Image (cartoon, rainbow, N blue to C red; front, side, top):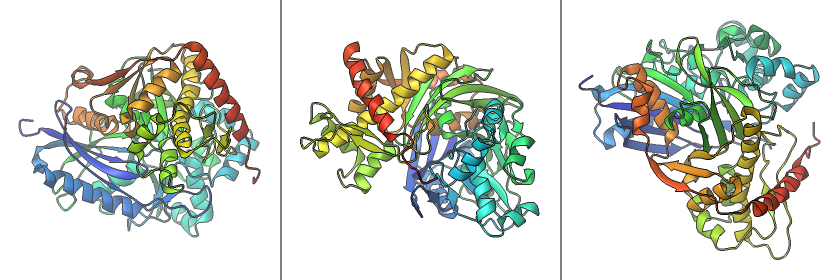
Length: 507
């Protein structure tokens, strides 16, 4: 391993693709990023072009290597992390997608989900997968494509259509594509499909049958860090050499791993397009009674997994994008920090950005966004502040549910993701929760977590203790509000959430 100094990660997110190269001490050596197009064919429909994502992936890989003069021979392994439930179906012989990717935010599968609920399938699904029936997950999206895109059902029946979340799509292309590409996923991504038995760590035939998905369509499920290697890049690909692809984690699990939350009870919250709070619950899955999801945190050996409770919030950073792109109230996300601090409070308004319904802990796919409490006093600064407050209140909804499920009272929470750079937001989060928020030195913990999994498999790191030594704190945020203010402000939020519930009657 003398000449192997680095691990590379492809971090394929909702808004763009990043390639990062890390050294053995967990420091960023190189990083490049490109956004891809968000496609909105109808209200509630959200798509990505898989071919555009693959093209951007190749570009950021080449740029990351060239910009810092990194030689392929110096890279020990490659990790992949991804927007989890986003669904691609493609022809394995041509590599051509049979439809645009259906993004995790997409709500077109409401009728499919409602039908499952009406048939009383919720309890079986929750017991098997740890999930709830929701448009969020991949299974109903595959079913929609099979039923609505001409010719796909026939192709699937004859082995000419395969499925993968974005991790599978990227790994398949990296390792050869139509020329022998590895059709694999890992325990974390498989646990987000509504199709995997959480304890068996394998596809559940009962669930595949419920959604009429041929087993031949789904990828092999492998550990998140795989010493047996998923496959190798080829010399003609963007890396220009044969390098093992051996790490794979859904983005939120990757952030948990990158934050080195290896002990039971350790918790992180990632502030991205949505917010995702995960708590390590150990080797036994905990069934949620409070509207959370039970999911796989990571798997380092065949047939074994560490589990987590998760609270998924659909729209947080995406609400800031909405202020910028749809309303024109801001020019860039970073300026929200100064704008929000220019007013004393939100002026009595609350903004609940339920653009894609409400996720945890409510799971109301018929909810829609509202701004309540408007008066003539309200200016754009109040709306910007209310948007930041909404991120923090939605997180409190999830934290309260998590404490109820796990029985662990949080005193600290690790934070990461793009919006965690906003000091005002992080202080507000600490105030609203009444706990300490700790931001790491490396904020891109999602990419780091996938790098760690690949590096463990490739032998660059030997154990989890080595990874823990790399973790460093950037800043700690302590709560300043008193309990009465915290309760009063949260009561207003709860009233606002009630106004969003069951709004869309177009069923």
